[in-house]
Image (spheres, helix red, strand yellow):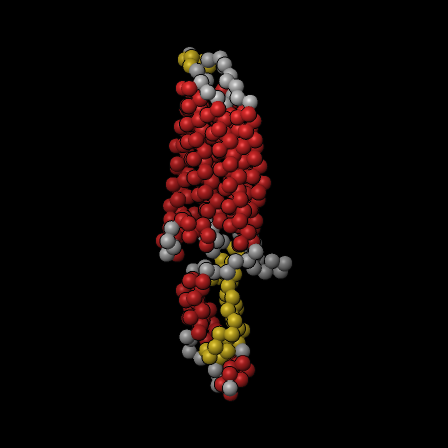
Length: 322
């Protein structure tokens, strides 16, 4: 949780400063790509704020109304990020770029004088975008290391598998957002440079349109991944199997009648099972075995926080008789 929070805070400060600089660059140059990047950085900043709210809300203690806590708040706020921020920012960016493509025009802007030095306004965009790339690289590497650590701990094949299976949506969102931000800044820089050198404003407009499409694509992908967790996704089969086998092979267990897992927050898993125990065991023996099983499951998978095992001795008896 602390690692995820530090990733988000690093991105928040970087994106907030970059949004202001990009907007200044847009005011000075009127660049369509720069306006798209301004929308992008504003959405990124709002993104981090929502994620921090989710982290803070998700840490609340369990109550009678929410007996398993508020861990799913992070799933919900990550979903809001994708729908309310990235989709809107992506749409506005793409719309602005499309309009610029349909009605291209090259603006003649007055030179800018700063600290006694006079230069073309486009160099403001260059400086801002290069600075944005440096800041975003820092934020990206911080999120990358956090996600890479989880991939190694969970023995996943790579980032593609992590995107489909991780419950740590806060770090996943920050990582993907930083990757999109880096790509967007690079595309904007290229579009502005090409328009400057060729005198054709279509390159600038096209980069704005492409940035908008990237943002909307990310919004859809992130919303889809959060949907699976909001609806109550189970542990992946290959990770659930060791827990089920541990239970089935435990001394005194005759049969595992039912076995279910579900995430109720990032890295917070509930395991429930209906278990047929040996009918010769008394209640005290069964209780001791259940306690030992619960402890071993938590040791086997660090995400397991709650374990509920329902003994079904009568089922065992009927199976033995048959």
